[in-house]
Length: 200
Image (cartoon, rainbow, N blue to C red; front, side, top):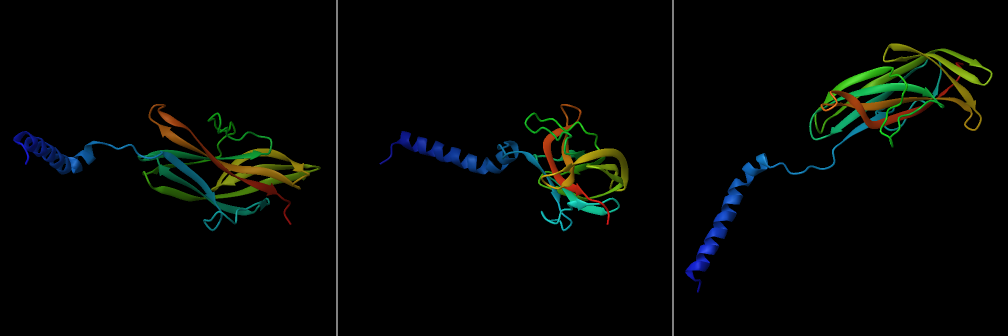
């Protein structure tokens, strides 16, 4: 048989458990449990919105399309700059180890606001003009991205091993930082190699 003191202890324990059970929905609103890893995604997809059918052999006057996208898993809505750049095989890419962007100029910027758990995707159309070939060099004079023309005057040397004149279209992801009061490189980039060929 239970003593009076034992009954008091059982009564207090049952009472506390009951209070916790009744208060748990309210505690869920007040107490924030630690979430998973916070990150952003960046991608380039081919013309069919798949990881295939990317343009590779390109010519002056041809029109090409890929799709650029951002996924937000930061735990809150985020403001992004998606910066499109163009390089030859000797120019710098972003340095992920050091967390620094490429020093090349941005040729086109998408500025997007993406809610947590959501994604954004848009076409990235591009074409080339003022192309010249001389001895073992190809020179791209102008690149047009989403109808914005930029003079680039980039030369690429003939790659004997891969038999082509190689350039790279790449996209860097920047995110707005309240602490920095501006956009900072978000340590993500994606790219596609392009082989410049003579028009037929």
